[in-house]
Every structure is written in structure tokens, then in C-alpha cells.
Amino acid sequence: MFAPTKARSSQTGFTLIELIIVVVLLGIVSIGIFAYLGLGAQIFTDVVGREQLSSQSRFGVERLTRELRNALPGSPRVFANGDCIEFVPIRASGIYLQPPDPARPLPISIPENVNDIAGSPIPPADLEGMFLFIGANNQSRVYTPDSSTRARIEPTSVSLSADGNYYEIDFAGSADFSRQSPARRYYLTASPVSWCIDRRGEANNHSLVRYTGYSQFSSNTEPSIAELNALPPAQRSVIAEQIANSAPVAGVNPEPAFQATQAALTRNNLILIDLYFARRNGQEPLILHHEVHLPNVP
Image (cartoon, rainbow, N blue to C red; front, top):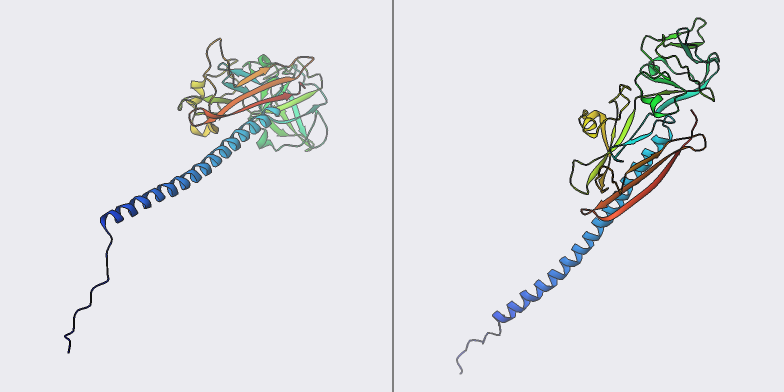
């Protein structure tokens, strides 16, 4: 008989060199995978960023264009070396049938039936605080504090006519309207509005800001950017960001954001808008050149 013997073990392990090779190979593969995923993520981020830049830039220019097309003729003016543009938005307009008489208090009617002015009826509460313009065909007649072509509608000046068919607005001599409109046209407007490039942020990352409610035609000079930026937040609205227009220099400004050509007998108002948008500290620029024509209909 033979005595039983133990079976030889057939189990073997990995050597240290084999483990190191596997770890190195896994590291190389992982680096490649992460680089591929990172490239995809970067492409996605760039596409989203470019789309956002394009969307906000076109929104800003489109909104400014629509507001300018609804501006009082002769009111758009550029200041701050082309960084700002100011204008007076129209709320309503129409044709007056009888010119105001400066020798008496001035009843101007917004009728339901035709009387002194032909137009659509407006509730008295909406008229209060508006300004009436007749014959204001240049900036001096629009913005001068004592302009004879403008009158403010006070809360106590709106009343219902005796026959109850229309509202009367009594300006009580606050303007004589001695200059008439060639087309017998009147405009009801709000206070001036300004659009400016706010350069208080980082370089090549400025903002396009809309300012309202800062003036009641108390001065013929434009407001400064410092005065506009000091307004309460409720009167400042950021419309677009990532603007990279070069900072203006007195007397030399190669990239004015806004330019305005005043209307004349043979031409309309022409507003030029040149806004430069860019990502990554001025790289990947998006340049928008736009023209807005404003009919000369004082």
C-alpha cells in the first residue's frame, strides 16, 4: 500500500511588474476617456455661450430699435462721446382740428366724438403726468425747460366736457403752442429715456443699461453717466452684457456705440447702432451694425 500524499497547489498570483503595467494602462485609458468627455463638455459650453451671446445681443438691439421707432421726432440725441442715446417715447398721437389759442386757457380734447382733436379716447388717469407736444421739430424745442411747444398734463387739468362726449385738458397757459405742426399733429409722451453702456464692470464685459424716470425736462443738457448710474435700481434695467466697445476718448472715438443724424426737410432721422459683444475677455467677437430710420413728421 502507498501512503496518501498532498496535492500540489495550482494557484498562482500576479507579479508586482504585472500589477504596475495594468495600473499604467488603466491610467492611460482613463486619461483618454476624461479628455474626450472634457472636449465634449467644452464644445457644449461654447455652443451654449455663443447662443446666449447671440440671443441677448439681438434682443437688446431689437428692443432699442422698436423704442427708437416710437420716439418723438427730433428727440433722439447722443452724448457721452457716443456711449449714450436719449429720446422721448410716444404714448399716443393724433391730429388736432383747431390749433390752440394762446390768448385763452388751452382746452385740448381727447375725444370720443370729434371736437378739437381727432384721436382715440384715453382714460384721464392715463393722461396725468404725460406731456403734450405740438411743433417740436428739434432738440431745443423738445428739451428746453420753458419750451413753448410742450405742456405737462397735471392731475387737476383733465375734466369731462359739458356734453359728456369728450375729455378736456386745460393747460392754463403753461405753453402757448405758438408754433404749429405742418400736419396738425400732436404727440402725448412720457419723460425721456436713455440707453447707455455702463463701463463700471470688468474690461470687455460692460453692460447695456436702460434708464427711466430721471427727468421732467428740467434742463436742456444731457444727463451724465454718473448721474444715471446713481438712480435707484428700479429706474435702471440691464438689457445686455458682455459688451466690448472700446472706451471713448474725448475728441477721438473709433467705436462710438451710437450716432445720430438729425432730421431735415430732405431727410429723416438716422440712428446708427454699433455694438461689439465678445466672450472670453474680448475674444470671439460678435459685431452688430444697425440703422434705424425715424420719419420726420413733426
